[in-house]
Image (cartoon, rainbow, N blue to C red):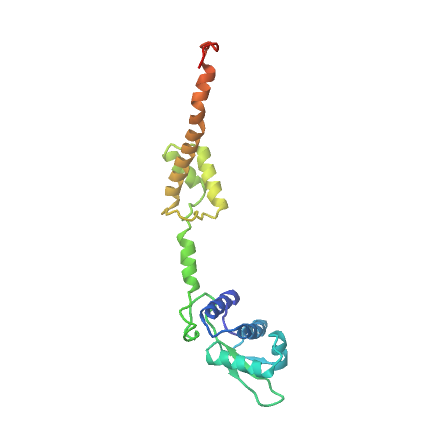
Length: 219
């Protein structure tokens, strides 16, 4: 049994299909028919195929079309086809592995023009770039807020907010650590409170004004 990650392998193949101008719909349906059997046999090194069953799954009606497409997939490096000319023995297929179980790119990938696949490691790097190094616990956050004379309740809000977000940042932010994010969190909270109260201050002052106005005076 080969060490193959179902999702990573399939995503890599589809990415390769998108870049390969030679690929047609028939190539994709045929590959998926083989991939389904490969998965059900726990990604064995080689699988024995039945032409009639495979044609049915791939929605093929012509044997000639079937053989043309499987020959293409073989020649372009998506799989290795070992035909059997014995009526009692099925043909065999060896599927090309693009990534192993831990997402490392392997050498036996498809040649031009289906090359230069994007490793899943790069995707993980982008994801981690937008994620804060989380504090040990809430007490560490509250201690940091206390050191800066910030309200304890704000510390609890901050911890609860990022805990629900799994300490991921919003897109477009470039913050190095959770302490820097806490500072922005507090400053933003104070700013919101200030903006919330200031617009009404003049209105409230007018309400408190005891001066009697003469409404008979023309404007």
